[in-house]
Length: 607
Image (cartoon, rainbow, N blue to C red; front, side):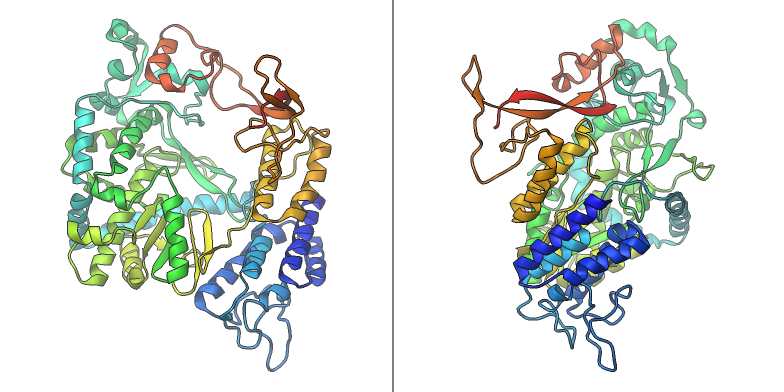
């Protein structure tokens, strides 16, 4: 922990130089409170300070209820509005008496406050057992709320949802109908863990299949290299709906405040979900499709550009939702596909309807949500649902029916990437009302439309200026053998350097160089070496004996992947099903995510 505290302090000192202030008292406060409160001060309390700071920027002034865990800069009958903590920066953003945002708020100070409060906000550390239990209980509570919503939602609202869905996605669904009917779906396995415990190459053995999948995606067509091997179906267990394996609900690190809850799908479900996903995303992002102007799945840059524009003009708002994936009802997804029987049947066959939560010792027998994070189809369908509801809200706010001409007018003003939503500011209230009418919860702490601050898809902006903090994602490595942490630390250092925090980057360079035994050269971002970015050119240490190309001595990642190996029919299926993925000549002997990532010292290209 000492290294992390030192990192915060050196960052505070450098940012103080940027902003012509002093952080001596701030550093003393941090050291004192960490001593009494522990690491949670850096990972929970400071990020909360940062969120209240962002809302104050959006509101236009500081409220006395803000920053309560911190004392004010001056007490008495007429106290200052800004807290004593980080007051050297705060006084250059807010008027300390009235608390209002200054017309000439210092952008560097805004970045400094966000950097110092968010430095450890997303460090990947396991939460306490009590926080994991609360997250699981929230998952169950969400199911109950969806059930209650389904019993009370007005039919007129669902009819309007269906009409808007047909306007946006009828052509996409028709194309998907055709692809599924003609057998043009190409399935694939993902690299992650599965509910049935199959990993790597073992996923291509697939000893189980479901009767629901068989009705749309016959095992012989999608899991055998050809019908020459039809006899192998006798060795497969075809599961009836009541005997299907449920998804396993687990937690993975997100923040120390709360973990991310995901659901591991059985390998046979994930296999066909990936196939549908590939084709669906291609259709949704087809430039000829009307919906492609408002949705994104592979590129976050359009959302960031619109967030920057919104912070500059004030005409665009950024919205964020709570528990977005777990609140998408299957009822709405079925409405999107109601006139497309093959597409609807395929999505239903690849959807798990039960969930097992081992931490709570219970099983949910009939899920109301469409799917949790972990399903390959969760992301595209939640975006489709959100876009429909957002446009319904805009139509209501503008008093105009949704037509193709009206949608063309909205191009460049509406964008959905997962649960990151951008809408016109004058339609925000109506959009929020519609989202809440469909059972969704808007995250007030991460939604902005009043002031000059906006955030979307990892890009944060104030008055058109980038104020995105550089966050540390992993703890400092204890050994260079821990390749993933070494690489994460070097990437963090490089982001600091490119952001202009050169003193902090130099402080990290000293420690990284010792860790890597001095083999820490300047390299380009395309180099395989674990090296540092610089505005100075790389220095050639020797020339390759055959090509005479520049080489540097540096550490590279060495992922250790253990089996299992496959041969015969599963190997043939893998080669035929995913030919573009077989870059590793030994992929039939080892496959999947590495069990450990080490490092190796090599001569490599610096570019």
